[in-house]
Image (tube, rainbow, N blue to C red):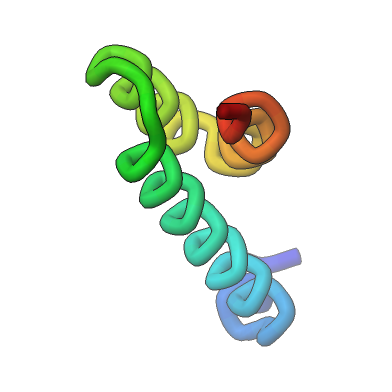
Length: 65
C-alpha cells in the first residue's frame, strides 16, 4: 500500500483522531489525578512514547484511587 493511500483513507484518519483524543483524555486524567509529580511525569511519558499501550495501561492500572 502506498503512503498516499494511507493518508487519503478516511478510516485511518478517523482512527488516528480517536487515538489522539483518547491520549489527551488520559493525559488530562493523569494531571488531575492524585500522586506525586514524578508519578504523573512517568505516566505522561509512557502515554507519549507508547500511545496505544500507554493509554490502555493507564486506563486499566493508573486510574485506581
